Structures are given as structure tokens and as C-alpha cells.
Length: 321
Image 1 (cartoon, rainbow, N blue to C red):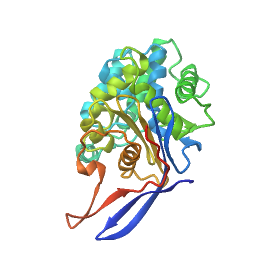
Image 2: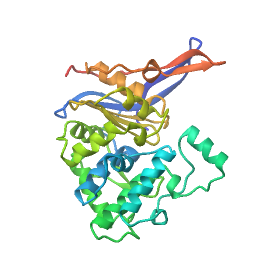
Image 3: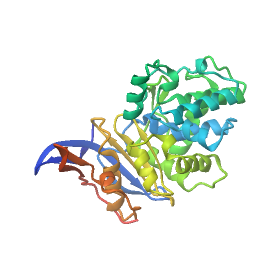
Image 4: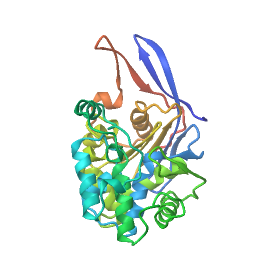
């Protein structure tokens, strides 16, 4: 871990804890406007890489609706609205739930998981938050006449295409590949590379592969995450913006004109990600859309009453765009 303090949590006037991390803000031309911590260090982008993976799949023949494309980028909450779209994507390509090779998990969303447990349903690959990505990977294999039984192997044509696309969109060589929680390859990138990729997508032509992915995110924020999730709350309030969360403290956001910010919280906490990203954008003069106070400064409760807040702390060197 190489970050610095990027956020504090207060309770009744005392600093209860602090979160360390790294941040980078890029201009639409890729100029670094603010850096905090170590945004050039290798980092697992985790699910923040999914938008780049979706671009690679479109380039290799994936045929999907806007809703299905949103699910291809999603770390979904596991609600019926998510699972129905995943199944539609599989069935449209002659595939079934049994073809999915992602790890089986209960739904990620709080309410969705509670509903699932009450229902007595079985934990399976479909209910895992990455099932949309895996369904899209399988559909791409069908479209390209590639083997579907080993689509997660790094030497598979699909994964080779994804690696080369990630390198193109980040402008960097992939410095390593691990295994993500779902079982798919997890590419090591930098925060700067993540921000660069999203900035390009945000300003891409609507009919390009990058533009299609960006528009799917804009049109279907509920499908990208789920109700009550931080990334979905932001996307619902910030018309025209795009963004993607990643496990263990990763977030990347981009404005319609291509300003982009990427955040990594060292301890893996999710709550600081968007407040820190927004503070970084404001520090360099990027105009933010109207957002709920709870998105910008998440409250800390005591006995059901607010007694503190999470507040961003940035000690980088901003330059006005």
C-alpha cells in the first residue's frame, strides 16, 4: 500500500478513522491535473476494467442490446431485473446458465440478498455479480466461433483480445494478470490508465464501440450496479457522466466532456471512493452536477441520528484545467 490519507471519518467531533489511498484526475487530452499518493503504481483494476473488456467484446462480434451491454459491464446487485437480462443474453446466443463459469455467489445487493435468502433459492453462477460479464464473454465466443469451454484461460483468443484492448485504451502495457474473484483474468493497470480509458469512452462517438459502452452506462445505471449502490446513486444524479466501481476500493468516473478521475482506497473501503473522486474533480475546477449531500459527504449515524460524516482530504498539487 502506497497511498496517503484521502478521507477521514468523524463522530461527535472526533476523527474516528482515516482512509489512505491514491487519486489521479486527467484532462480530456490526458494531462494530469492532480495526483495524490501513487496513481502510477501497478494496481488490480478489478471490475473497473469491465468497460474496457466490453469494448473488446464488441470489437470481436458481440451483438447485444443496450441493456445487455450494461450488464456486460456490471457488478450487479442480483435483483430480478439483472438476472433476467443476463438470461436473455445467454439465450439469444444459444447458451444456458450452465455455460457460465464464474464463481457462484449470493446476490451482492443488501435488499437483493435478503430477498434471496428468504426465498430459499440456491447460490449459483447466475446470482453472482459478474454473471453479466461472463454471459457476454460466452456470447462473444459464439459470435467469433471460439471455444466456450475454456474462455477464462489467458491464452484464449477472447482473453488475448481483452488484454490488447486494455493496453490500447490505457496507453500502457499490462504489467501482470491475476485471477479476479469471479474467476476471470484480472489485469494489473494503473489509476492513470483507468482514468485515461474512461475519459476516452466518455467523449467517444455514439456509434463507436467505446461510445456504445458509455451510452449503455448512462442509460441503465440500475443495471450497472443496483438500487442504493454508490456508483448507481452517482449515475442516477449525474446525467451524462459515466463511472464504474471495482472491488476493494476502486472507482473511476468521467464527465461528458472527458475529464476523468480514478481512486483506489488502500484498505478496500467503498464509502470513500466517490466523495474522494468528487473532491479531486472540484480541486481542479471541474463543474460537478447537483448531487445529494449523502453522495458527497456520507453521514455517520449514532442512534439513527447524524453525528458525523466522511470528509475527503486531498493534499495533492492541483492545476486548473
